[in-house]
Amino acid sequence: MNTRNLIVALVCMLCAGAGNAQTKIIAHRGFWQTEGSAQNSVTALKRAAEAKLYGSEFDVQLTADGTVVVNHDDEIGGLTIGTTDYAKLKHLKLKNGETLPTLADYLKAGKALPHIQLILEIKPHPTKAQEDAIAAACVSMVKEYGMEKQVEYISFSMNICEQLARLAPDAEIAYLEGDVTPKVIKEKGLTGIDYEYKVFEKHPEWIREAHELGLKVNVWTVNREADMRKMAGLKVDYLTTDRPLEADKLLNAR
Ligand code: MG
Image (cartoon, rainbow, N blue to C red; front, top):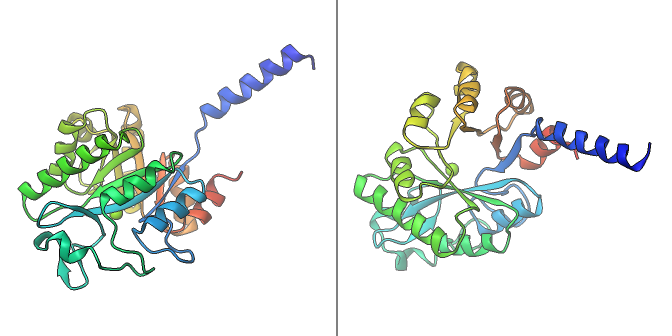
């Protein structure tokens, strides 16, 4: 094969590859099932980046005095985050001994790891005022760190998703609850659906409908190999899992 034909063949291979996108892997609460790590720790974000995954998911909550902290539950160490000031929470430790991270800690660490996407889940809060406040605080902090392209938002709260769409119209925003069609998501100005795999078993057509509307499709939380294969076969764009290495090996053999 001469040089010109070789170049043409390589271009064709690249084009074919682009049309056959792989399922991208997102570590659920970071890559935490590894030595020295813990769910929603900064270490879990770093481990996900070391594993060369597409993204690392984490959860945030708002303290009584308006600090955004990284934690799945609305309580930690016997204290309710939403009714406790940050000063009383800041010394609490995660299971790996790390101090409870703030969103600022997380963004700072993520900025030094530019090849991984930060999938920021804003948890539903008891009042609309709290939800509006945490959505605004997250958007403002992401902007302050200049990480608008590296952070993608997800939430079970439609109110939070709508606030995000208003405050950050160029951001990637996906809804988690799984109770509305892709058409509704598109009408609300969101960019994706991120539903439990059982929802897609019931409504596999939502994946095609979402893609036809230009929406991205993520699926949570897929830990069994048979489910990973099934969801990849349905052509989801992203797969969120507690077993990121196994998923990456299974779906994206390198
Ligand atoms: Mg989460």
